[in-house]
Length: 296
Image (tube, rainbow, N blue to C red; front, side):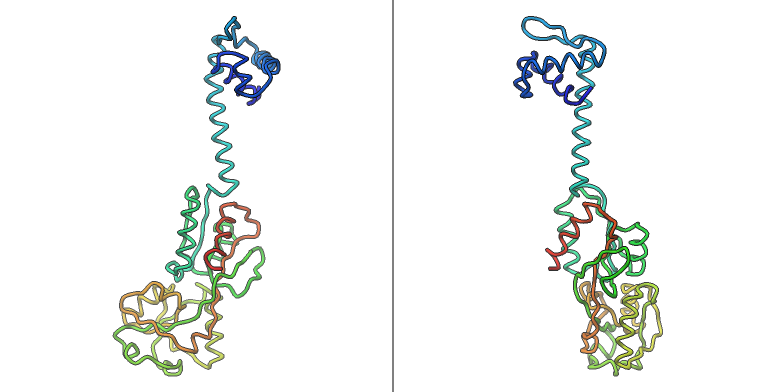
């Protein structure tokens, strides 16, 4: 029994005759008659009773008609689901984003455009620091990540540069620095700093420290925070000042003043998208295809 024969059978039933069905399915009448006889031979019983004006279903024919309708509907639904999966119109996509960049306009635009264009995809976004993102990408529990990397070459990963970031100073609004901004890092050598842990984002941490070493600057760290949002909340509480990515200012926080310093502008912090080379998900590649539209 073939789906093609079931389609012909349904056409015969619904039109009431072989001749009318042959016109509907665009198959010559003798060929259609032969296919119906083959179908009856296959199921082992008569499906039609022939009469002068056409055909009438037997009991077995009525049962097969109900089953054929269901089988053909199921096949159409399966084909539609597979087509949607194959073209990335459905499925699942997990994306990690550094906490700092969740509110960056380009990142928000990328997520918004993807959701609008592919509403059938279950789109999961995880706020993760760069270190945990790399681990999950390599484990295969994350499809793609927006994170800090030290360059394009990472075994097992494909990468695409999104944009260049730099560093910025964050001080409490009620601190003396808010009314008398420093002009250089040297003025901050006695200030209390809130800092992050290297394990959270090794690339970001090492790149920042290397830049400070070239400048001969060593911050006096008195407090540590798990991520930039935590660090900034500590700054707002007056526990110290901090140096964070300039992207942090895309989501202003009450009680904080952001300031640019020429020495911090010169510290390049490139933001990348990364995904596993072996990941052939159409939903993922549709997202990658939108990166140039947003960040290009």
